[in-house]
Image (cartoon, rainbow, N blue to C red; front, side, top):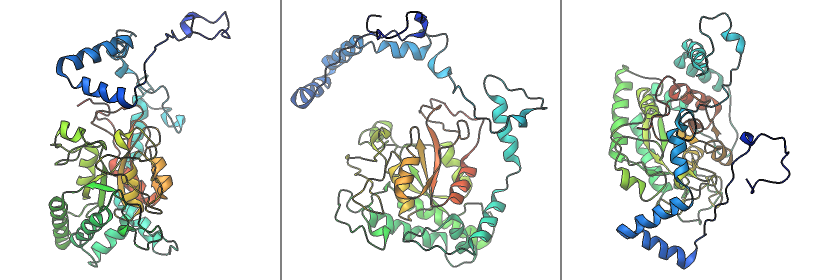
Length: 394
């Protein structure tokens, strides 16, 4: 094509080059943008404008690629080109052979996970932490701290739930305020706006049931009574999934089912306290959100960004509202806010967690954010699992 750089070697096969085509797309700002948005809302005229814009910019090429009419296979059939085998010798001498679909890789992970005892791991970490004393401004209660208080009857999950409900309300009273002192000794008093949706009745009911199990000493599970928050990009029953917008929640309505990750956390005994804030549509790394939900603020300094897009999840853990939160990471959306908020975040390996929702499954992975590496490891152990519909469109 004439638009290719002249510096390309003449011997380069044409099949190795992009077939570039010059596309001129006008940029609209100010009054023209305002007029265009109003025209797009006109029933018939709006559709004609959209159809014309798509045709001029060859939007149909995207559809043809996804459907497989441009290439030999549809876009959704492509898997990551690299399967990160930690030790290829583990596969030698086995009946399973590594296939192109990476099935042997997943079999290896399943075998390695069979001998993992979550309850024993938590108990061992508790013994190690008993002799350590932390000297820092922000001291987080770990998962084991909650469980220890419950089992020793110093606290009940219901008491903790009442305190969390109160703290969430206090920390979200003024989402746009920047007047809070960054040196406040109580993170929960800061207007951090980390948790944007909370069903108080449902949270307290979960806590009541958990308290009964501790009282009867029956049915106690690994995360029994531990409060956990979920990013507002993941389906949580009886909550709308807004993706940090003002309109998607209204369009999609209230979720009738939990995402499989949430199901696993609940099955392990966790108390889900609500949905966390996020960068609008998850398309940025600052955590900026100027919709009605407001912007999550960094508990270490409320005038600073949290990072994004899992801003509320990192802020909730950093403020001590919850010991563990769930985020989603495509290009740093767990790792960046965790770093900026001084907590720990993990983007899992491809295929290590099921995510039954619309997402770029080969890039975007669900993962834990916690106040310590141990808590993240515990959360990861509960959330992880293969063999499901990681890239299901339902």
